[in-house]
Amino acid sequence: MKSHLAQLDRWLARSISVFGGVAMVLLTAIVFLQVFARYVLNLPIGAVEELPIYLMMLAIWTTAAVNVKRKDHISIDVINLFVKNQRTQKAIDSAVEFATAVVLVLFFRLIYRYFLFNLKSGNTTAGLEIPIWALLFAVLVCVGLMALYSLINAAKAAKEVAAWK
Image 1: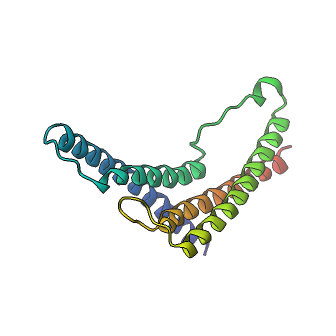
Image 2: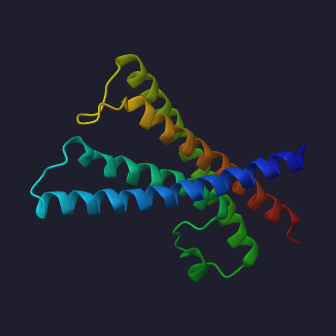
């Protein structure tokens, strides 16, 4: 069972990375097309102008989940300047990982409630009339993955502290 979950996790991370890359390529192409159409052809493209915003949003949120998994996100290790004991450093790192996981779980709850509100209200985007709940669903899944990966990272950090002799 564990290997199936590991395979699913690897597939999910790979799929998210590919989606982020494809979204960025599409975003670049759409912006180039918009600039070319507007300034060379003097033709506005219309509602497509909001598409790069949503592609950027989806690319950022999806790749953020993978970055939390791999611990590739930006972090500042100021504690190491003041605390020299490695066991204490690991204990603080574990506490910070746990606090991050708690904050992400709370954020997940807020996004979930906002998702339900938009699902009921039927709000759509201004130009393309994309249901806002569809965009929020992607954010909800990504924040859920970030919370899950943070909990896993916190458990690993706590295990390292417990195993420290």
